[in-house]
Length: 196
Image 1 (cartoon, rainbow, N blue to C red):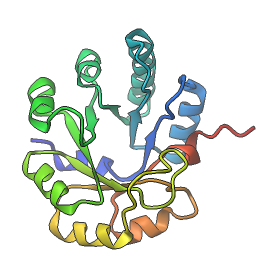
Image 2 (cartoon, helix red, strand yellow):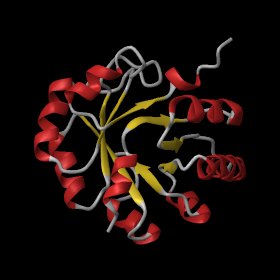
Image 3 (cartoon, rainbow, N blue to C red):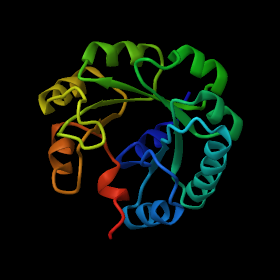
Image 4 (cartoon, one colour):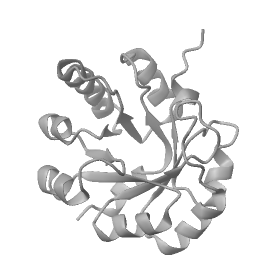
């Protein structure tokens, strides 16, 4: 089973790369400036070679900074490079399948949108953290289901795994998410919008 100190790393800012060509310098800057404990690689390209290349570069960066490295949706890629884990959405592979492929030490996270029952089921099936959102209006997923901060507070009372808040979280509103009970907050644009 996963050690407790690993759960401590699912805290603070959970960085997610933007869905476009990797900017390694921007990723390095985000990790160093904001002490990122956990980073998710999310690039929906169908080019497996690009994904493999980018994931390997990010993985090296994460290793150097002692940052957990999670792959979005792609169990094959996570297995191939021996990433720290995978993040699943509602329509991705099952938790059991991911666990079978990646082993007992892999971190498996799951998007639960605004559904506490889904989160409880996921916890029972052995996920290591759940994500709720969108907490705030999000430019990345403008049509995302809205999840109220009250839902986070209620979820905190019934779950004993880390809760990640996602969707429109930035440096101005992150404290509201933490106050509601999030252990970590996911940021994409707030971290990776290059300062032009």
